[in-house]
Length: 395
Image (cartoon, rainbow, N blue to C red; front, side, top):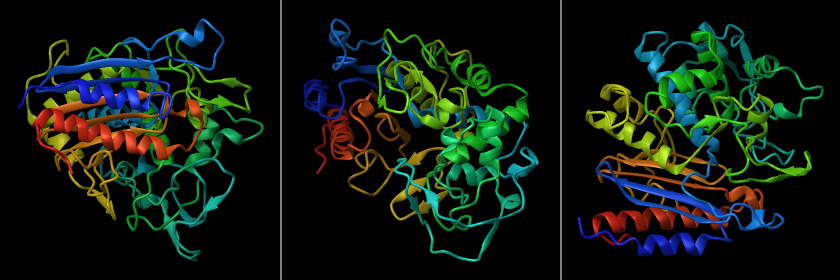
């Protein structure tokens, strides 16, 4: 490796400030060692002084959004290793209501526009929910819709009542014919884990993932707001979300769900990524961890190609390397695996380049959409990181 120069990465973060996000953390680990660790920006530039001038630092906790899914999936795979379930176990064996022929119907727009989207043309075909396995949920090819407006029910059901609504949902396409990233599938996975273990999901994740890996910053909300990166101003609540989960469905599910809800720092998210890298390679646990995390054969199965639709490639819970030049993973090695989060978060593990990097931001502080700023930043960042690690220019 050539001598690592942090200046291009510093510049990449500075260019994105006030454009893609008001605050961010970035931690890069190479060969197990922290190579870069920075926090930039101010947490809440639209707030009244002195709140508006408070800088982000290494202890600032960000809403991880869908990066939370990796912690859910890792905890589920420990249950699989313990023999409490199998990846190919039908979901209905744990959630008995998830059965019967279901219609294929247009799905709600995941961006909450109120519109519907058709994944496939209207058809008289039905999907048998009994045939859906946990592998389908993890590979995002179950046929389930991407999203449901659970949080809009009035009156609001209990947490269990909302999960029952998700269990009873229609499907969006025939199973295994497409790959549609689905929050609903991970909501069901989290509910199944609670049924399997007899514990709430926050305790499962703590006991099986964050406590053994010594990741103290990573918890479900609500958390103290003083050093939490705020996200979107919610008109329906008349306030900016800060220390409470941004995702409306996770919020309706008491902040604890399989698809979203965790908060944490980039240092701890990167440490989680390093634990995954070590398990993938069969290396000894990192200092501070209480023991081996997941078996190498488990990580290899999780990162094996399980489903593909065009340039979208999925493992079990993980997004995999994409041939799309506009994907954040494209500059990485072709065995790379990781995840993005809607709030502006990401974690990538690149075994080929002995690399882990976690970038957390509060991109949605400026509102929804904004992919014209966040996507180019993510792509440029991963290219800059790889160029800094390998010394090779990425075209």
